[in-house]
Each structure stands twice: as structure tokens, then as C-alpha cells.
Amino acid sequence: MADQLVQTRLYHLDVPLLAPFRTATGVVRSRSVVLVAVGDDVTGWGEAAPYPGQDETIEDVVERARASSVSPTLAAAVDEALHDHDARRRGVPLHPVTVAELPVSVALGIDDAIERASTLAELGVARFKVKIAPGAIDHLAAIREAHPDALLGVDGNRSFESMDRHDLGVLVDTGVAYAEELFADWVSGAAEAFVDLSGIPLFADESVRSIADVQRLVTLPAVGGITVKPGRLGWSDSLEAAATAQDAGRAWRASGLLETGIGRAYTDLLAADPSAGPSDVAPASAFLTGDVAGDRGGFGVVRTPTGVGIGTTPDRDALERFTVEVIEVDLPVSGWVGPVPG
Image (cartoon, helix red, strand yellow):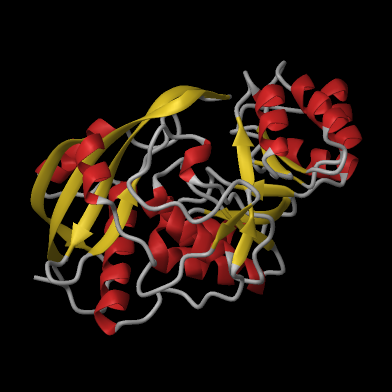
């Protein structure tokens, strides 16, 4: 059976970052993303935000879209937009909001982590996910010394083959709450050895690309939890991934891909589920020089989106300021069972 087609308007945006953001996979200085709009009288929104070095390139997203094809993050964004459109058409929220405010948790890049943590702590932030890599981990100890009560997690972006005694000691001594995707291989033995020696739960992140991935990962002894990213899975599979982790007795947390406020709204709605663990919730102003969606709080807490659909829409002036090009194209839809806007 052939996929349905949906008429879309794609807004290719380029938004500079406030400062370069270095992880184990490279340095990012601006975010190139594609906003997906479906429907006319009622418009649903999604966001394709492939992360450099981890997902397909933004050039691939655009090139395949021009050929009426979808890359993985664009497929996720189309799914988001269809869900948003359907909820708006019915006049209901996309997801029941059970938590009105969420504590901000900011990801810290390797280069300026200590300074950024201090600046953000003065603004009320008490949760950080700290990027680390082999040979680049001592900044974590400095952050813990300066902020003894902060909730700290770490993200190795699959850069470790194993964990040496020094790095393990830093993680244990700083009392991190979770470690995300430290190792390139979940079954090499390094992941299990780390959990046995440290007692720190390991979360799968980049490894989570589909429901099949989630179903496999939750059977592995080293996997303590799943990081669910709507920007990679879409909305439908994000809900299923969270439920699958819960059913398997694994924790789960919500996270994003350094998106604008459109993509962030999906992460925030997911994080507002009471079963979610400490999630990556932060305003776009923590990273971007501007945003296309309205601010929903300061740096201490973010207000969960309210209203119909995802509870936010792009500001037209901001959208025009950051748009590189607009593409109108019919794109294939897989697995969608609701009405498709014409």
C-alpha cells in the first residue's frame, strides 16, 4: 500500500548560537533546522533538527524533501506536525499537562561548562547535563565543587571505548544522577562493567532511532533507561517508546536536539508526564540568539505549553528573520491513521 501524501510548507532556518557548543562529536556554532507546517485554516507544526555529527545533515533533509522524500528527522517532524494539526482541528491539547512548571536543565558544552554553569546558577538553574569525552572530564569535578547541590548528569556521545580509573573516579565522586550514551557499543562489556563499578544508571540516547531499538535496548542489562527525543522518533513513537521503557521496568527521560521553541514544545509536553525522569528542559534563549516561538518562562522553570495542539506557534516576524528558504512540497506519510490535511 502506497504512503499517503501531505501538502507541506518547509521553512529552512539558520539560527546562530549564543556561543560555540562543543561535544565529543564536534563544535556547533549555529542551528540549521526545518520547520514543517501542514494545513491552511488550521496549521500544525513540527521541527526537523538533525544534530551535526549524530544525524543526517540538514543538506540531506532539504535535498530529499525537494525530491518528495523524507530523511529520518524530517519524517519525525511530519509526524509531529500531523499530530499538532489534528489536535488543533479538534480544539484539544496534544498531550494532557499534569505538571504546570518544569525545572530547567541545561546541557553544558565541554569548552565553557564551568563558566556557563556559574552564570546559569545565578539565574536559578540547578540541573545540568554536562558533555564529557575521553581526556575532557575534569570540568565536571569543578562544577560539582562550585555547585554542590546541583543535579548533574553527563553525556559522552558514544566517545568512550572503556572507562579508565581516573574518569570513573570523577563520575563517582561527583555523584552524577545518570550517564547518557557513554560507550559506542552496548554489548562489548564496557557498559556493564561501568554500571557494576559505579552504580550510575546508563541511558541510551543516540542508540534510540526506532521502537525496534527501544525494544532491543530495554532487554540489555547495562541499559538503565531510555532518552526519548521527539525530534528523532516523532510524537507517535515517542509516546510508545516511553511506554515500552516503563513496561520493561526501565526509566525514561525526555530530551531534544537543540531546537527552536517548536521542537522544544514537544520535549516539554513529554517531560510533563509524571513518569518521566529528569529531562532536558530549557528555553531556547539558553542557546540560541533568537527563537521563532514565544518564551514560556525564565531560567529557573519553564511553563509547560498550554492551549490547543502544542500550545505555541511561530512568530511571523521571527520566522521571516531566520528563514533561509521556503519549500512547498507533498511529502509521504507512513503509519498515520488520522485525516491528512489537503
